[in-house]
Image (tube, rainbow, N blue to C red; front, side):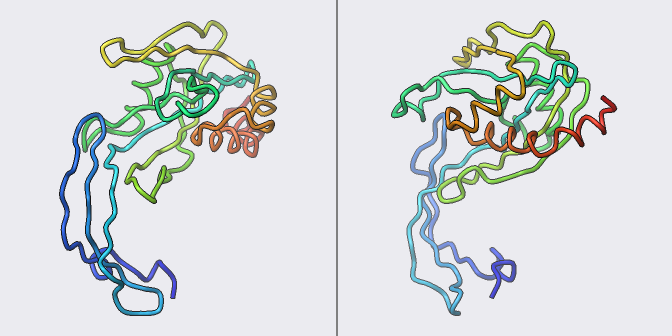
Length: 206
């Protein structure tokens, strides 16, 4: 039996749902049953669910310089790593249910990197960590002039301190391949660019 034959409406029974914590992040506690591959419903299990707004990320690429814009900022989830200041792509959260994802992308690029996109294309949407979170992440590739990009950006009232750097694509690929990047959206974005750069340049008529 394929999982595509299952549905939330028919094959998941939520017995209890309560919010255990609500701050910068929300945590819900669920007691539920779900359909088994062998047939029938399984036992009631408890799971904690991290509830997050939808997220958007943009890999900013300058085909004329053959370079990408990356940002660096402190991340509490990387405290146990050797360096909690993480290399990332520009990313941000959707503010409302009806906010257009491309509008979010343009806004975050301006706020976090201080550049304006000339083009933007959707790459893919994925679940960040479905084992314990509902966060959806939509990845875009955007074109910008990076000749004068750089500096420190972010919204101080949100505790943001974001350093912008422009890196040659081949150098970025080399850093990725030797294991010095551990941020998932950045890895997915650079792997996509590695596979699609020539086609992207053709579409953008470079």
